[in-house]
Image (cartoon, rainbow, N blue to C red; front, side, top):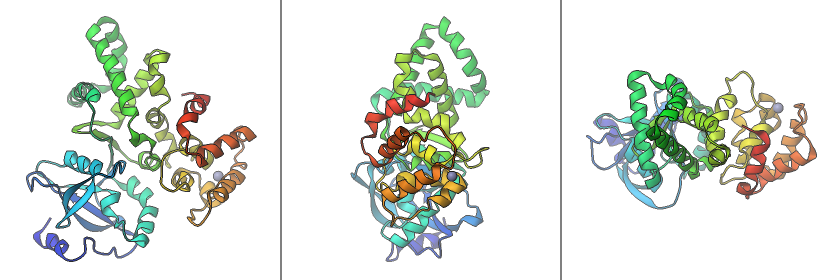
Length: 361
Ligand SMILES: [Zn+2]
């Protein structure tokens, strides 16, 4: 970051206007060596210029605020994002990120609309999507230490592939390993209970990502590592022990993300994506359909156009009307009612285990 660029931001406005809807802002998270205070500046880029950046997938979380230095000024951000920046900061080089709360001028509604419409592209063009799960609690810390050392070990010795094969054997022989096994299961269950997983918008953020990395406090590990552990635990554990993990949204993402990627062999009908994830938390109930549309079949996107002037009843009627054209046994009246309750209702936790068991693993 040159001195002249930095000086651009010490003027009146925190943001300079984006030239048009094809431009985005990228955030330069300055390294620890630059300043102890968390310091960020934004720069404009066109997506067609193929900038290299990582996109953050996180939840806004509680409204407690902490101060950073943003575009040359003290600026309050929510606690969860503050902790993410604190832990993502490099030692000596700036880290280039796209983060909705800072890269979009949230007070400019026009800009917000066109930037939100681009989010699918922003997440699919990112070199990596970083899943921020928040700070670890006491229960997670010990197990994360264990997982972290395995991760480093596998990175050094390319151990990961064999790991899944030999682990069941090791488990039989080695009591210490069994203790580790239980610890790993407890960790996965604790991670799966994080409220991050209940957000609706993470569905597209996770499914569109070219590469995914998970960060929990200072600990980071690859998505594949998490996925392998989840699948291994689900295959190994007793039914009662794995039940909380089995029915978790985290495990569902581990199973289904590749299937919902637009470049996978078949695009999924929208009603099916809504069936799995339409009960996610979002501020506008319409997002339970619109927030998933970018992952769906083209015919569904045309039949259920994104229009925030619609009512949820209209959108649901359009979704059902169109979905009947996809021949499927799902269109029993009882399933239509269940889908309706899933999208329109708020009480999703109550109905989740029964519905999800319906689909098996
Ligand atoms: Zn369709």
